[in-house]
Image 1 (cartoon, rainbow, N blue to C red):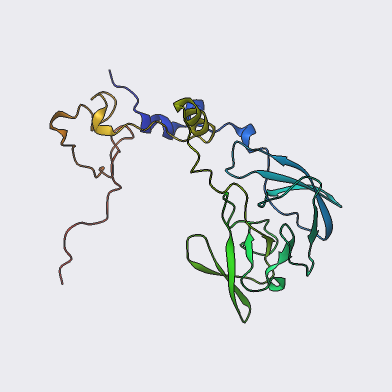
Image 2: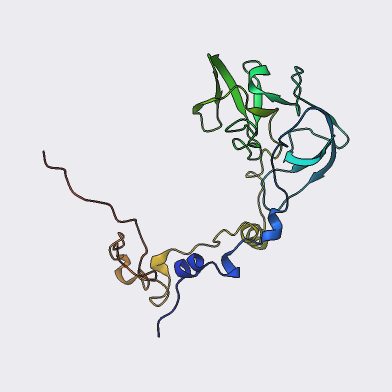
Amino acid sequence: MAKTIISQARGHGSSTYRVRSKIFKYRIQYPRNLSGNGKVIKLISSGAHYAPIAKVQHSEGVFYIPAFNNMYQEQELKFETDEVKDGNILRLKNIPVKTKIYNIESRPNDGGRFIRTGGTSGIITRIVGNEVYVLLPSKKEKAFNPECRATIGTIAGHGRKEKPFVKAGRKFHLMRTKSKLWPRTSAIKVNAIDHPFGSGRGKVPKSKIAKRNAPPGAKVGHIRPRRTGRKKK
């Protein structure tokens, strides 16, 4: 009798391989209308994010952003101002060159899309015409609209990868929280019933390029290319 392999089960999206919806209860983005002052009313450890989350109170309600390094509760933040200070949310056109920023909007007023991982930040490198260039953590430079908003500072949570898990159980629960497949077993090391590459006789797997019309249980390995071999002139 055939058996559903792990790649099929993950694609089906059962509760075993799905992130719990309640873990994403904190929506990280700037409010559309943001001005004046705000206050950090709480710092939150979110299972769905690698950085601590700050709950910020402002005149029209509350919103959530990644906490910056050395942030504390009851801290005052300023929005749409000329003061360059950690935690303040400004338009890129009002931020001087060589300033560290994070949570940058892709388009004006979209809430923030770029640089949201713990311990990261970008640096404004130059302003050319109607474009502000930012050096991303990937060491690539990207141009942004000067009306886009960003937070001054560096996201907290630096060094989280350096801390050892000590026990396998901690790693298991962390990966399960984020719906990551762990521990991952090499396909060639499992039983033949569990994977097309299974049994590992001779340690020589079958073709690693899946056929284009293969069923889900057999569609494992590399994505089939459009063509192979040298291109004739």
